Length: 489
Ligand code: NAD
Image (tube, rainbow, N blue to C red; front, top):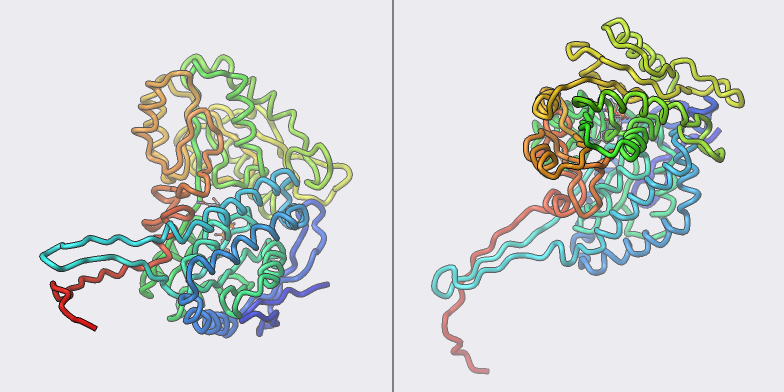
């Protein structure tokens, strides 16, 4: 059974510690490989390599740096199927979902290829007589990326292409639950023949993460994961004087007005709630059904949800794979039971899913809890599984109030045919990503992946121009020269 290595200074090297974890295929719970839990020394080695490489990488012109990204895009296209297959194997999502994820990853490489223009500076002539002032952007140094399990291919790419293109060296710490995708990506990065140390991969868990947060050479930390860990990352990085962007968990509300196109809405909401087995930070978690929508929406969404075919994501015709682990499955079943105990009724019960060909998988089926009381703990808890709760409201105002009571602010969506209602919603709702007749409001690579409240700690988000700002520090120069050109040669 393969034990993964770290990739440091252009070499595959064994981690120094002895602790390892099994990497499991969640559809069968068979071991795919083993991942080392790297130590403080491993992180130190990677940070030193990255810092050494940074000196010459930042001097490489941006137009030359992006040539590596053009090449990376080509290699990712060639290896698209294989990377997607690895994502399905270690994460459980369907092959179609894995391909969607990798498409989003590649789009970020494409956008970062525009860094020579995106990094351009500002220049003001004659801010005082004969004096000019300008601002240039310089890379910050070693940038660390700490990723979650649910998008093992895409999420590191919210950061990596921009960090590299702006002239930083990079250290990636993937999720210890799904590290095989980044192993494959780093094999491809290795083919690019980047200068040694420009990209580094350190496998591991909290020990490696904390070593990154404490390492004096790491200047920027990009994190995506659950809210308690995001909070920890934000405060510990800040205490150590680093810039940090930490994207956290979510509990996304969708509001359905009675004038919505119910067929379209039902289809979109079902995909949002049950796609990726509900393990998306932009998954619909709660639908607030307004007014007479109560007469049509609950039955329609239950029917759409019941049709989803659950199974191993590499098989044809599968709409939903397993959740990541047996522990996760048990936790989700427990939350469904708690919702029922708190007064919800079960419109659709997916707790006991058996997929005959894969009896050991972590399968659940779509579950819908109706009339979940607002005061129930389940209303506030991120379930991160294929569970949708329905809540009733009388008016749009009341629905917006319920949305804004939530601690998270990753996404909020409205389904309506009314432009006035849509405007009101996007204006007042407290969420960073808003969908109007959209169920997964995932920003394209040229927009920031926003997030508010407990879904984000920091100022600058991933993707887009935000990344350029995050990975560069501004330097302002005020310059005076003799006013008259008098010298003769
Ligand atoms: P997680 O927080 O358990 O792990 C994320 C990373 O943090 C991993 O690399 C892990 O090794 C590390 N980590 C875990 N515990 C740690 C600790 N105590 N100290 C230091 N490091 C630690 O998250 P997950 O379960 O892998 O991913 C799911 C979560 O990520 C969900 O909450 C989901 O909403 C969130 N997520 C958010 C976004 C977003 O854009 N806001 C996107 C995807 C996922």
